[in-house]
Length: 569
Image (tube, rainbow, N blue to C red; front, side, top):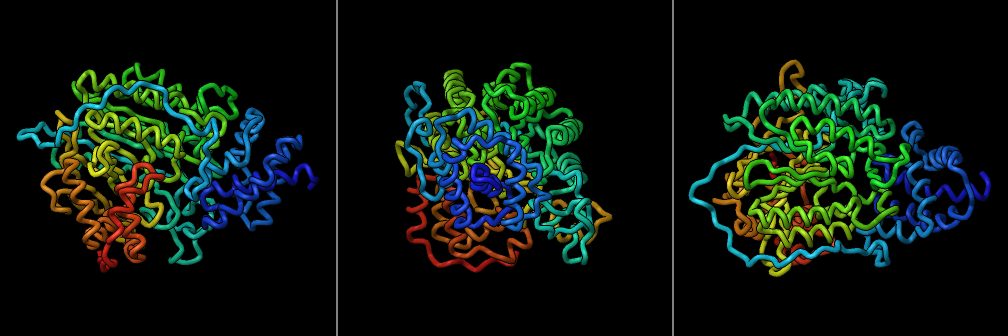
């Protein structure tokens, strides 16, 4: 390989690091690969190397890193990287690394990566302590997220293949029972079969835990499987055309309010700005598909913002509004951050304007989005600006609903004008997929129809080990817990939730309980347990809505007692 082409190696090394399972994920390796990129990017800019040489460099890297090139030979992200580099002459390695390594304290303070949303947010209303109304009209809201069904899932196939996703029919049969994929799924890096999605929907409809009809369904993204090396626009669209009409069939009378996930794009994670019209790299195909499918439930008014950037707002009922964000634009593996870092699609400014209008109209708001704002993989400037906006509208935002982590959790925001006061709560729906070491679940919220506040919720699941022992019968879906019952709270208002996290800091047994629920009592996760560092991490994840602000985390963990005993179940 010539001198000019050799500069592609560090660039591709970075791309490989971003493909789940392609290379080791240890921080030291990620940092080393990124440093390789830092030393080579400027050379690449001036080398004149043409895009076709990516393939040659790619296979060279696959050999030198002992990576099976089968899973990387269609790494279509290379086309996006070429486009971004060709069209962003001021891009530097330092800027790219400042985003990729932001959780390793590599901040970028130079324009255009340091920006603010330019809007007058007005005066924040005076604080009024939360109170629970004597009488409420309860709504039933079903939350589904991260289904990740795999069209190629095959029981008996190998579950230990070493690829980003296993248990697939074209990977061959397992040599023994221990490495074989189960009928209903597998705790290892495998997605779920389509009939697993059908089982969940059938259970949620037929055996409704509250014996009441579902009023609304929230879906917070990720239809597509983890077979990232062979996704395509056509293949993804086949999954969408199966999933969304099935939702309609299951919940004929209940509207579904969706959000897009990072895996829903092709290539995964890549959400191009709306001024990128080159069909080879544009995301317009996805937005047009979603606008068409989502109009099954949503009014035509959502089309302009969905086709612009995959986000929308709609009034669910008088006094309750939904805002569905495409916050995948903040995912640090979305390379388009480096093409246009500041507020992609003007979405955050639109969010602030929509909240201002909702506040003036006396509406309460539920925000849907795939990635939790406190996730350290969310581009820090975007996360900071999002938090600044929602902090201003804490009295308008009744709750936030997320997915992405495959963990059943909740997260508290704390008020900027009084850091001791919890101001907003976000609920994570967990996942239907078992990827990895978790059981499948869905959640049912009881929501105050007047205030939009969540009064209680229940998590419903089945145990994968038990289900796979009886493949001829439907899994035994059961209630894992009710939030109020499990944590002994009389209310789920913000004051009570804040008291709960302080009890967690003082009582490790509650954190152990929380950990078990978060992994939905996945057998491998319970077996590995949650040590003292894990306990601190569980608590800090709850109280961190912007990963650079660890104030509440530091406060609560400063005097945490020793680790509690890990529960058997």
